Length: 196
Image (cartoon, rainbow, N blue to C red; front, side, top):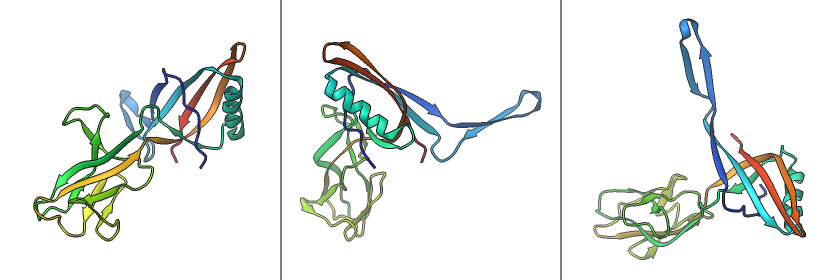
């Protein structure tokens, strides 16, 4: 799937849109449930401010090529991350499952960890500084849960190296281009996450 190659200006706006089914019953009673497995979708309002005509035309050409029906990948602003030698556990000789976690931000303090998901390529996992083989030494789920075939020995430091970002499958049904001055254009677009 093609990836949207342009970086929006600051001020991108996220709107979350729950997909809800509602059944209305007598006496004012109603019942609500999530509609489908992906019950919460994102809608991004993006600005590409003060762009040269060449870039504004390229954004327009990309969106025209997809015509509001063909989905494409969109990297969520400010979601990129990368870690090298990130500790995620110490072996105790018994435990076989550990969750890959990374700092919330590059300058985050100790304790501000979040699951390391959305990898660009599978993480490299190390036990006591030795690179392990995915599939043979451990299995890794998309949620970042590493399950080792044998429990790491007592005191063995577990680390990983990886990079990633939140990537959505979106469509764009509406965008506008405004000429602000000589060779200065603004483009506004709305990206709607697809459920599939």
